Image 1 (cartoon, rainbow, N blue to C red):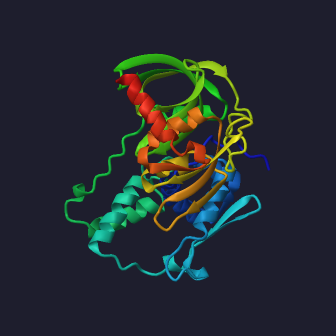
Image 2 (cartoon, one colour):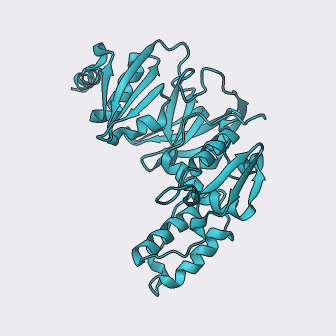
Length: 318
């Protein structure tokens, strides 16, 4: 089966879970749907959808026995869902849980692909009488992100986009042509990673700082040097440098945003990650952004790279 080309870069855990909140009620209502149809409905590749379904299939409630797990699986070219036993029992919710469910449900209804008249919408109506008399106390205002869909749609074909971008540090605006390679969320903001004609490099742009966007009609399809895969084998063309990083909770975005060759979660919440990187310069920029949240363990010669780079930056602007 031919799969659509994956978006460049992994999705965050928040994005995956939020998507499942919309997808599962939609799927349970239909029982069995074509894998390709469901992927198209929720703007995912088939590979991404299969990964999400596999994750959902091991989710449930204590004691996590088979009858307490979400009964969803992929059968050849179809996705199948059955109503789990845990969903057939009446819930015993307190007021705080009702409030939390309402807020999360309303947020999920604002996500792409949400069925405005589906099971989730019906459930929210049933919860409404359990809330305080003034339903206005629960207001979820998720403002749409301008140009988000246009950028997402430009990734697969490698469309050329002319943007006007505002840089707060210099209070300057610049026009540049970009080729989006991935769109992702990090720290509450949406970003596009794109080939940038102005710098000649792959750059990240915060989408809410894009003031104008127009298509130019040009296309540059991704090649092997611009694709990102889970093991990092084509993250950098012929990358020679391998590094082992200790990533703290404050820099969790490093694990979610970049490919890695291996990962191990420590008891203190930190993560040991082995990555392939293209240059010390790229790694130094990453360390500056992550601050104390990332520590280089190997190679030993680069353990002080972050401090050396920070000192050079200070001297430059002194």
